[in-house]
Image: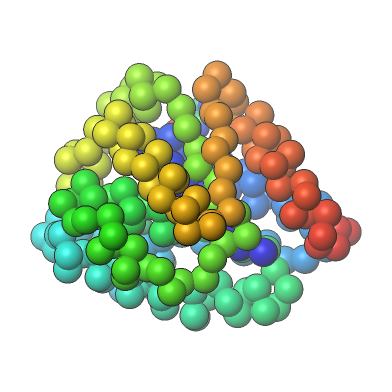
Length: 202
Ligand SMILES: Nc1ncnc2c1ncn2[C@@H]1O[C@H](COP(=O)(O)OP(=O)(O)O)[C@@H](O)[C@H]1O
Ligand SMILES: Cc1cn([C@H]2C[C@H](O)[C@@H](COP(=O)(O)OP(=O)(O)O)O2)c(=O)[nH]c1=O
């Protein structure tokens, strides 16, 4: 089962993905693989560094190439081994971040439409002011983080969510407002319950 964690910069994706993987490891009779995009491969690390200089269509294509390799070399083998995969960012991130970088939504989709559909894509939402406060605490923002604002990202995320709905993606919005990370993960586990019921637990 592929579980995607999405949402604007600073909403808590990395924190929640890590905690969710821990909680799933406790319950599951199957391995849980935590991963991220861009990937931790040479290409993914290159993209993290190069994001300052590569932009627009070229970045959209390069990110889609990294994602394709992620699916083929890491996600599918982990799923084939009977595991659950939790990824911090996936297609919805491109439908937002590449748009911040002035690429059209349909064009971004055309580079991503053949990737593996997740079992569920979870979109984390919080109050923009809370996110602004968290980003202000960051020492250094990436080019795209500095270009978009939490308000704009939330707006684009909602549009991407509606677009993916029309592509029949299985998605859920997770309200993080006023919730601790543990409470957010509990809400996610409630959302995942019907899917997890179909997989064996220890
Ligand atoms: N539900 C939450 N309540 C309070 N703080 C949170 C919550 N989720 C994440 N944080 C904090 O917000 C900051 C940004 O979280 P992070 O996981 O890095 O976000 P992202 O991966 O979406 O950029 C971190 O300092 C993290 O500890
Ligand atoms: C996953 C993804 C990342 N990126 C870019 C934007 C980010 O500034 C950069 C790094 O992503 P980010 O989530 O900031 O990674 P990390 O916090 O793990 O270093 O990659 C895209 O442009 N589109 C995407 O779909």
